[in-house]
Image 1 (cartoon, rainbow, N blue to C red):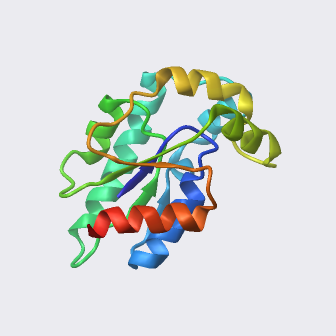
Image 2: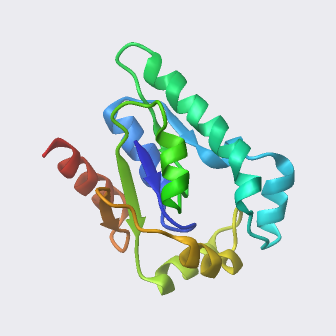
Length: 159
């Protein structure tokens, strides 16, 4: 499962909750960025597709590795803003489900402003402009508490 969306939607929080509830490992895509790219984003500079390519390949490798284990899989928190990125992430990984977290821009902007680390609100506009909403994904509004969002995602997964 890939929990996706722009920064500030709660991908990590909801992804961790889903992984714990389902009993799968949790992977945070930010942990797979090289330090130079992390610094670049923290300075408010978006990455380009050339920067993202090796990162997406590392993430795909991790998803394939987890999927190859008996009775396994993983929950990955990753922006996955473009269809091209999602195809690259899912290549060779059976039964990938995407969960798209979304919400009012004002709420997301405030969350980014309030958090102490990670990507700041200055990248939100470029991420929103880049976002290609996924077809066939479970889409959830994050205006409610993360626990409620997680339960709605689980309800849709099991339906």
